[in-house]
Image (cartoon, rainbow, N blue to C red; front, side, top):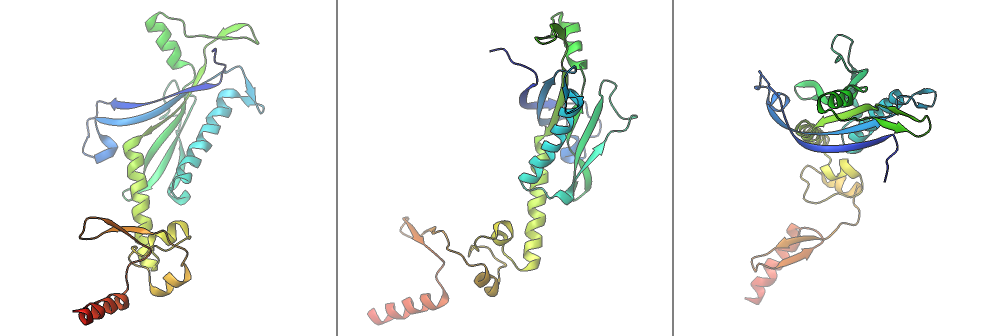
Length: 241
């Protein structure tokens, strides 16, 4: 089936770089896991009164921010940083970084670049193969522009761990258990810093939990036994003996 622009190709794998300062942990390793999407657009198209490449670049920036917020990163810990002309790559029309406020400060989480037609033209030049796209409407061959969202998996994982750790510390200070802060639906008895009044105020029907006894067989209980019930069973066992 012949694809029509715009369309994208995603990939994930190992990336390598000639890093001269590898001492900065995840942020400066010579080998890291990277995922990216090459999103091809027709530069001659117009979407909502704007060139297609500019429209889709802005759309990818918004979608990437929404992705991080959807999966747990706080909006107050995220920001966009526009590349200035001095640091912009010679082939890029525009580049925007999504930055996260790590415990060590703000650092890049991913980048979304409008790389124009530089990549495909370079591949065509050195491979000797034509990488043009035939526009059926205009009856002409064009070289698509590439919008490239690229993210490091290691940095992303570190950001989610940092966010979860910060929320857990905040929950402990406030006296609410982690389950209450996360969903406000039920209070799990195993979450530690929840006070008795907090348990009563957020109590909901709880899922049964599976525990393992000395027999090696799982036993299903709805809540941990209280001190009163343990004492009653102990007295009953003494009377039987």
